[in-house]
Length: 342
Ligand code: ATP
Ligand code: BTN
Image (cartoon, rainbow, N blue to C red; front, top):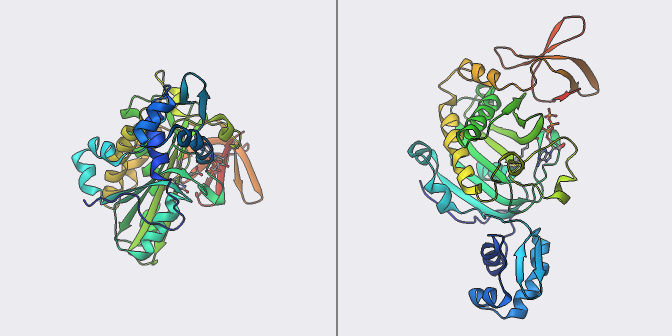
């Protein structure tokens, strides 16, 4: 495995080094005096004071109290490659080619799609503190504020053409649930095809984008957005029920981003590596055991059309099954379909 730091990628805008150092110093969420911060950064106290605006612009909430100093509204653990690598299993390390960590980028998926056009690399992981144009399925926006959540993409190359990838999204969903369970997060489920839910609220989403010739080989970029802590003002932009790990875990989730990222890679990288050598049947039973919509009243949206009924699981090809009022069962492929609880 070779490593790299903040790659020079289009659409990536790194923070000034001193600003990043300041965020790291304040990350514990405790008060730090202006004098202490000035000394650590090798700048004047008034220069520290001037950084307040830059922090706000970066999306970091700072509290300044006279006589006490500065502290962040919420503790914040910046991503660190060393800490992620420390928690990787040998299997995952062997599959990882390198990690890119960006302070601010339009979209980690976009970055790796661009890389796929330029190089033949596979196993590249792209992470960001913030996405300025994070994307969800069907052109929707993924809310991606600075420093609190996981925005993770993996570029992977496959021998076969894009048709071998049907079912990949189900496998990726299973891998994410396994990772969360390994960290003690219970009650996580999957909403077809690959949204990760906790008690009927969306915790994470997966977006897979594929390129390559129809006959093969092809590449896929698997993108995962997972909410660790969603600040209130950003949450207001989400137009459906959502949740973050901070609200799920009794001890909160502020200090776990690097560990969590590693655990996700420990499950996602092997799942990608073994995907072509396994049949879909390998993933189906486990996916079904996590199905959080089963037997619930739902609506399926397909373009302008709307179908209501009861979710009846998935068939052996991974298609969504809907039991309609007349008892007829209808199957839907993912792509342009949207499933909602009614
Ligand atoms: P479906 O794919 O079945 O339509 P969905 O309704 O979740 O599921 P997606 O396109 O998969 O839609 O996801 C994008 C949607 O996710 C956005 O419309 C928004 O409501 C929501 N969303 C955006 N950012 C976040 C986030 N950080 N956490 C949770 N939900 C988010
Ligand atoms: C969805 O549920 O709609 C999928 C959301 C996928 C979001 C992730 S965040 C990392 C990667 N980069 C993106 O722009 N999108 C995916």
